[in-house]
Image (tube, rainbow, N blue to C red; front, side, top):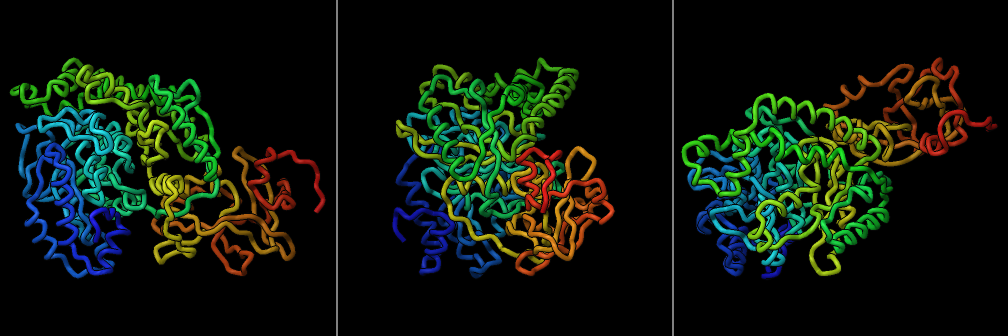
Length: 592
């Protein structure tokens, strides 16, 4: 093992395959921590001997332990048994008797926790300088803020101390540090990762987040941690899905010219434009959108009643020991004292109206892409103005959790001035795998080839209409954990119709003795999701057996013979996608 070896999953796997032990890895972890010599990264660093003892007690390495011998750290608002949890406030500290739900799952998979990392106090901030435990130095440039609130967690991965780290994300704390330290930051769908054992910031909006050096490692960690927790009332049964090549084509919504905010940073603007060009080369169609509704949502996070959620966590300290809080933290959360229950309900009503406007934007695309941060700020900038730079850093992050979206920040090419570039891909709740798969493609990562057959827990389903990749109803598959197996055609025994009625327009696939090959896709859908999906199938459509061009068969959408009365025969096009591209119904007569 070399001292410059990355501690990625692949590198660790190779090291263990060639004789290295977890103890060897741990000694290297602590050597790197000592070499950097930044005591503000950790609030609690476990003694190396304690972690070595834990490593030596690991069961034999096997597929049953997917994180075997993988070192990680956790933000100090996430419980690790026997280690104080401070949330960045010594007066708040307590020592938990058990691990947070997510930490327990990771350790059960063989991961080794090294320590607890620094943060903006009570996870309030995006800058990483609001802590009585010091300011961690940015892993790329010590003059630049480390990002927050998950400052230590982002810096630890940026330095290569550990394979992954846990942060939390309410307003962007799992994404902003990723951009500033040139790493990946995965912000899951709300409820995908349990919050049991996590000090809340805004309980209804919080999620544990994951930092890693690459998309594959972040997503593999997410797959292990993703599980419903009966002790967490906000936990959801969300299917992690699989990291694969993703759809061959997809629509990405981006801020239009008037919505792109860089606060005078022309280099950052150019970097984002370059990233969009790269996305186009990876199969994306760019759709410019007016982000005004999203920015209106973002304003509500700190200027609306959601500040009162933060107050519920620190109310006792605010009333009895206000001097124990960081001055900026106390000022921000203290604003909740002026809010009433009526203010809270007015905020809820306004958010609901803005959600509808935001959904109209999302209905036009598969994902959103934004700059992770609009510009960079130095530690000196924050000393001069502790509020404005923090607010600006949240430009493209503050609206995400209020709208229940998932996202992943991924490094882009370095800017022209050498600073790291970063974009964030955002998707509706439950589409974590889609966002991560597109992020991996953008980053040039070679993902594992997806299984070309359905597993024992899945059903293969052939779709020939709006459920195909990049089309209007594809989200009904991806949101239920569906994954694309292959793009193919039927055998030459089918006709394709545009059925009467609607909107929406619907295709009808009818088997006949002699017909044509029709474009379709085969998706694997988890068996647990099939029932809910089938409930939405309207007559005269049904599920039958579709014969594919290679002679294999799959369940798929078919139309009853009576259902084609009044329908338009579009077999000559061979594809519902082509039919949509040329404008839908009212085609001229076409002879076969």
